[in-house]
Image 1 (cartoon, rainbow, N blue to C red):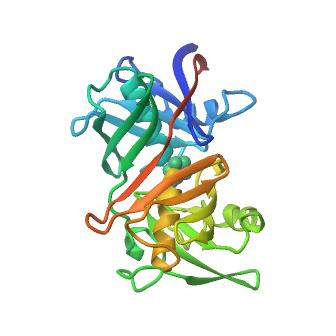
Image 2: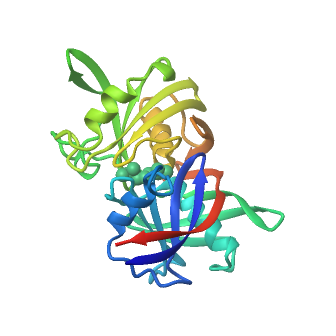
Length: 290
Ligand SMILES: N[C@@H](CCC[C@H](N)C(=O)O)C(=O)O
């Protein structure tokens, strides 16, 4: 059977997803994980880092659900939140420039910034970072303590990482040169199946440039190397502050492969704010055969 599935392809700094509008349309597909794997395929599908659903919400203005390229469902997605905010505003699903988006890790407040009436950039209040080992989660003890510059030996080489959850888990390794970061060696090995990270983790590499600027690259859990990761950019700024390489209450510019994000960890609220672009690539119809 062929099912016609209308979609919009959007990206934030090259981190691209296929977006399905479940507010104005009926999304009766047999399996979202399977659909995520199919549409993400660049040869037999559309090509993306995963699938995002825009749905009605009981507790917020709209709801986001995110599935990685391998079909796994994540709790949060920073670039996805900005694109959902753009879609919701540009398609008149919300009436004001500030509104709430429900995620599996709680409601996030989005503020859209428009140019010629369309959303250009979005600020999202990503909430409080989660820093306790057992809540991230990272295996080991003490469970309630933070994981900062923890040593990890792999193939006779010792690395250090700091762990942060922005609703989804991130491990951050600080490096001297971002282009020499062992993204393939550590990313592939640690992201999806290593017992150190019971739920997997997004594996990030951070090169501090100044106390308000850093380079960041990522191997994402469930998707592999991507051009950018919004929650990862937030986590990299938080990790840089925890390691005393950057400071709270000043905007930190994060250079990712696909462009820049601005992240600020505010001490008054303990919330992390993320600002950056959200772009629409195209609309189309996917022929889902099942
Ligand atoms: N690219 C995203 C994060 C997507 C989910 C992640 N791979 C996970 O499994 O946690 C972002 O922009 O935050």
